[in-house]
Amino acid sequence: MRRFSTDAIIALVLLVVCAELYRETFNFRAVAFATMSPAVWPRFVILLLAAFCVALLGKEVFAIAGGVQGGRAAPPISHRTAAICFGLFAIFLIVTPWLGMLIAGLLYVFIMQEVLGPRDIKSRFVHLAIAAVSVGGMWAVFTFALRVILPQGELLRM
Image (cartoon, rainbow, N blue to C red; front, side):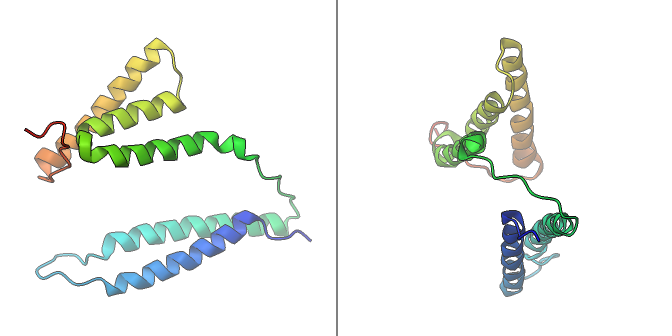
C-alpha cells in the first residue's frame, strides 16, 4: 500500500487553513451603507483555493486507490526559476514606494517575461510591448475609470 504523498499532506493542511480563514471572515466589521459585505471577496478567494486543494487531494487519493506510484521529488535546483520569480516579486514590492506602481510594474512584467520567455531581440520588443500595454492599461483603468489612487512613488512626486 502506498503512503500519502507530500501533495496530499499539503492539500490537507491547506484545507484546514482555508477553513480557519473562512471562519475568520465572519469577524469582519460591517460597513455602514455598504451594498456588499466586506467578506464577499475574501470568501470567494478562500473557496477557490479550497476547491483547488480538494482537487489536489482527490488526485492523490485516486492515485493511491489505483496503485500508481508517485515519482521522486525533484531536486531543489529544478525550482530555481520559481525562486527567481518570487524574488523578483519581492523586489517589486520593495521598490514600488520609490518607483511608483507604473514604473515598478513595467519593470517587473518586462523582467519576468525576460526570465520566463525567449531572450532574442525580437522577443525583447514583444516583452516591452506586452508590459507597456498590460501595466499601462491596468494603471489607466484604475486611475481614470475606477478613480483609485495607485502608489505614485517618490521618483515622480513633484
